[in-house]
Length: 110
Image 1: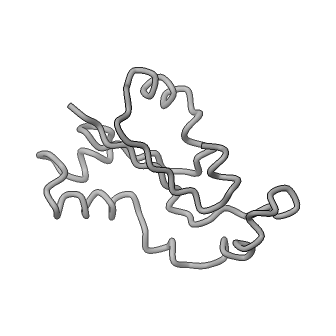
Image 2: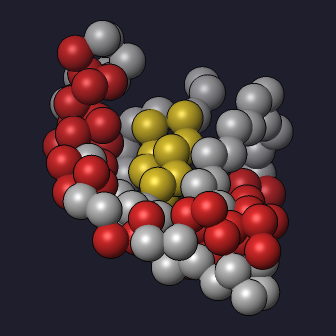
């Protein structure tokens, strides 16, 4: 079966470094916004459950890494290169990858 991988920090935008990545200057101060406080991995899993995208066991099972949905919680530079994740990625072919990095820095890290 197909697996769905979700990568999100659930901590908002990381602190930007406009002196190193001038493209990120527009996001300066955004790391202090509180909009991310309502977003959680469990909330995403519950949304998947509401629309029928989680198998039996629902969010609790998925949060333990069981089933077709995997959540990599943390910034891209923390989660994507992790050895366990690299091994899992190497065993798969991907049909779609969508990266939503809020900053230039996080996008190039992915």
